[in-house]
Image (cartoon, rainbow, N blue to C red):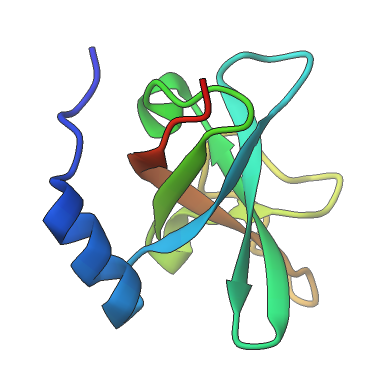
Length: 110
């Protein structure tokens, strides 16, 4: 059902190199297979949308997780025409939400 967890040493290395971003997973209250992780990049703080059971990957609300961003063409649109699950929202002038793939649970809270 789920891809194997990334080894802790690979997560640590990925966080140092910028491949992964760490944050707290916040589950969507209406959908168990959707949520977001607020991550920092320099002084900026960005909400990375996590959608789909594979990307949520066993994370539950409050888990500290590491995420890897999908390629830009898989980012979700932020406007009313945005499709769920990837791809859409590439209209000129529209911004895109960052869509992440759950890489690993960095630290479980429960």
